[in-house]
Amino acid sequence: MRILLIEDDMLIGDGIKTGLSKMGFSVDWFTQGR
Image (cartoon, rainbow, N blue to C red):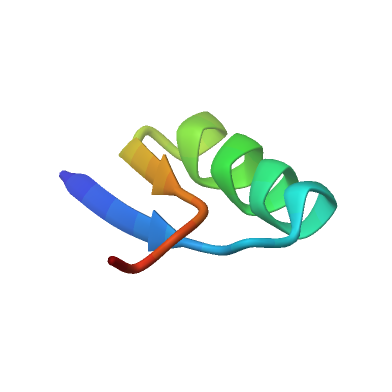
C-alpha cells in the first residue's frame, strides 16, 4: 500500500516514514502541501 506523507518537520517526517516503511508501506514524503 502507498501512503502520501506531508510533514515539514524533518525529524518527525523521517521517523514516520521509517516506521511505515518497516511495516511494509511505500511512503512518498513531501515537505510542502502545494
